[in-house]
Image 1: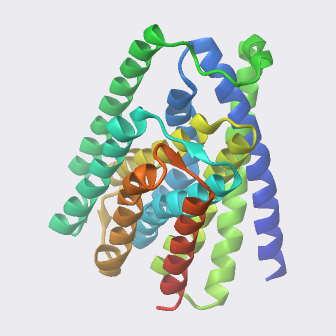
Image 2 (image 1 turned 120 degrees about the vertical axis):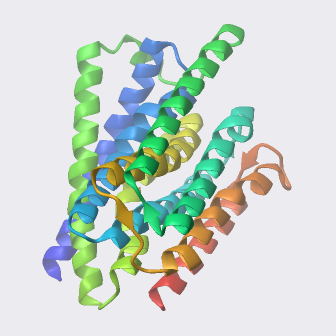
Length: 319
């Protein structure tokens, strides 16, 4: 148990460092590409912080543990909103722009509902469905960048960021991206290993380990990147990163995993319980964005989301 605790501690440390490098490189990159920080959060940061889920899901599917592949993604999507958004909003209230409810949220909701129906109809995901998810991801990114370019003509790049990063060399940006990615990957590996060992010692099922321990472990990169961004007032990256990560988790992580090795549902609780929690956490964002105070997810809303996540985890572990 001592080694597991050490792995968890080192994993968290690496993830915080990786998150810092990733946020710095993404802000510098937004200057170079003259794109908004929201777009950078939805593409570069999201892809890098979804890498742990991808590695875990592929490894689990190839080893015959499909429940871990699905539970990891569904649990991570729940954790991204319940845990990460909850904590981030509690630290610093998050402003919401029109793109959130007009484009990004509908895409996340559509993919979440599509995942439910595909899993229910075929009791899993086959290679063709994996290809469809990847095509949808490419289409989403194409539309996202097109929208950003149109907006750039009507309004300048977001203010309130470190102007010094605009002078960052390409070489330094690449080094920061690599260090950030390696930190997040290495940290997640250590954290997942330690968390699974601890959970196994407690005698919990694979599915429960996946939607709780592994999901939290692979969501720590999002937590690290978002909390650091929130503290630095890079709020566009915080919200963009979370919505983008959920889109990437379904479209790229499950898409690529299903292409490499079709995913079969082993525990029906994935369909009867876990995925409904995921849909619920995604759906609640819209009323929270407008009620009672419009276009802001503040501290009380963050606390409500976090409390809901604690209930989900408690119920999962008590099964």
